[in-house]
Length: 331
Image 1 (cartoon, rainbow, N blue to C red):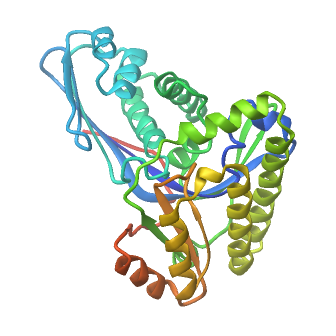
Image 2 (image 1 turned 135 degrees about the vertical axis):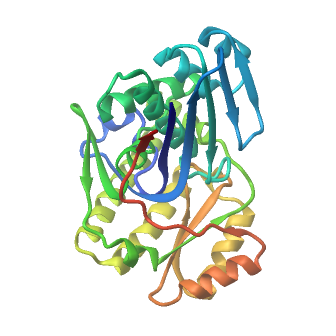
């Protein structure tokens, strides 16, 4: 049997960090707005042979073991190993994974990879879990791997695709698709990778601890981010892309106040260059400190911003908006 799965990564537009449980429970109406993109995380499982083999094309790491417990004990490809241990497929499988998003890009690549792997293993063993249960399993396994609380927003673009507002509350997470024409949004966005990876758990963990410890400054900062996410949702519902660009700048200002380390001298310089050639505004993706920067361009100015970023020596990531989410094929 051959099983192939893919899950999109995402660009977060507004409302990051407030998606971490239980922070959103302290901010009524918490939401996050993001968009799924076709920089896919992929998983391929072939059955046959003996034991369990895991391989990552991105890192070059490979591990073989007789049992799932031995996979986990090896400490190699821990996210994959822990997911295999949870689903506990019969021996005789080889899993190969890869992700088009650069490591540490801030595009939610590890979470998308977790969803792709969980989806493939779910099909392999026939558990047929619904999407929310797949999300819960993947979140819990990834949290055990990174050893800090995981935000929830990255899993939903991987599952559903599209442009969504995610509403967080007592009953869980509600996904609201937003009526944005993908090509119109694509014409406004340039995505550049700084070449400097980041680890999202670092900034978010400091914010999380400060919030739980009762910091009014952090509470007020996250509440401003909550309001900004609501403004982004309203702008996209109204299909007002100029207003959405303005709100993206508002999100960036709020995030810099909440976590000063979110920006770097390189990121500030890139944003200045982009502004000079037609970027309305910009923000880092994910927790910042490196990774990717998304630029919101004035109408018709995307080629200029794209060219300026390439001239600045950073990698421009070409993408399209994904509308399908997790896909699993069996042959």
